Image 1 (cartoon, one colour):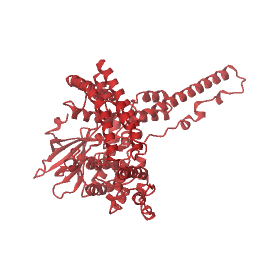
Image 2 (tube, helix red, strand yellow; image 1 turned 45 degrees about the vertical axis):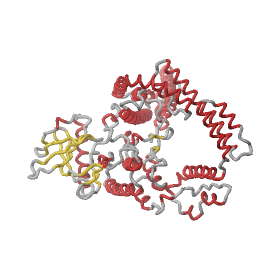
Image 3 (tube, rainbow, N blue to C red; image 1 turned 30 degrees about the vertical axis):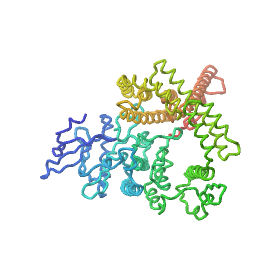
Image 4 (spheres, rainbow, N blue to C red; image 1 turned 180 degrees about the horizontal axis):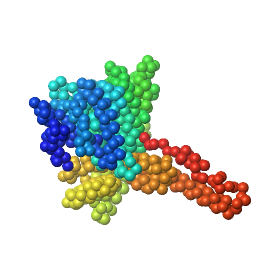
Length: 596
């Protein structure tokens, strides 16, 4: 609730007239300077205060005064708003900055998946260079922005320049041991742009680079960060497809900007700018296969796959990590083309394959296989035909299993499971027709009860139980009337579940380093299943339980030794030499390394 601020006058000068919304570090408003004759607009940012304890406020006050000096100096840059004033009023801290007339970058980014609206590579490179030059200056002043996103980049009306706004990182995200993860107070518009390390208090200059890279991906794909898929094992962003009009070199730069582990990203904005300066003139036509050569049967195809030594020597070090995958993709595409050009089946055999495919799609697997086996072994397409048999058998088995699972779920009225069990069913008309009947029945039921599922999802999300919230949302097909809302909430809750899992794991590490293994184990037991942190949590649970048992044995031994010393005054073990936990330097032995 921010409406209570509308109309208020701060410092008997700045009258709040409109709310601009919330950011990571506070609430922003438009105000007018009623002392100035022209009543110019300015931006007022009220910083978040998480505690009103006198000691906390005093510490924050000192930091506020120190860091506002830096913000004042940042305003000297032509693409950063000037800091007009900063003050404290009623134990609240405020920044007053220049108002930038214009529109946010959000208005320029593609809003759908239509390639016609995507930015070109040149536009993206120009954008990156422009914002990186701003961030380079910001970082040189010892400041990390912490909330780079489209809403905080304004296209200034008077000159068309991009301006970076919303500098309010006076108070970092606080992960005190008695506080819950503050993800729930972070605006959804910031989620996806904020990198993982920022949620656990390990913000780096490369955190801003990550956010900027995510905007570049959005410009090239039309997908917001929350709509992008992540690799299940390493959580890297999967963003590039055949429709993405970007060269391998520029794609490598953007991927390095957005690596999940901040240690694997560009360290500084200068590093990124340097890489952008060396974009090859013919970058869009380049195929990165410098270290991996593929040979076919003909000299013509050898020239297509082989790269010369001169090309190899000119290859950029930036691309080294991408060469294997890109070369492999090139090889697969090349061999496919070669097979089609040099081994086209004769018309009769082609007709046989076509008839077999129709039989397969109609539901006669054995008849389709019999037709394929009728192709002579000396035919050019014989190897391909034999491979097709194996593929059909495998697809048929998967489709049959999915149908059976959906049928059982339907009989038990587990309508959500009917939907999920038919996801990615193989493209076989016979089985798709059968499962469509079950799916439509389930969808009809869920459409009637979707509001109930939504309410349960919201309730669980409010309780910070994102696993349960996601379970309810996944029961609702995306094809329902609220499909767009469901998709948005799925992406939002998946992101929040990931952040919460990372936070819980980090807290467990912190507690273990203090020797508090019981508390650490409690945190680990809360890590939700299905997140990248879950596997690590299982390993750490076993480790911490083992360490807890070791400490218990040491405590027992120490107590027994002390009792023996007291009971036997002649013992050669004196009380002053009693074994203690500290003697084993457990703090060093059990040292934890923070997760990345």
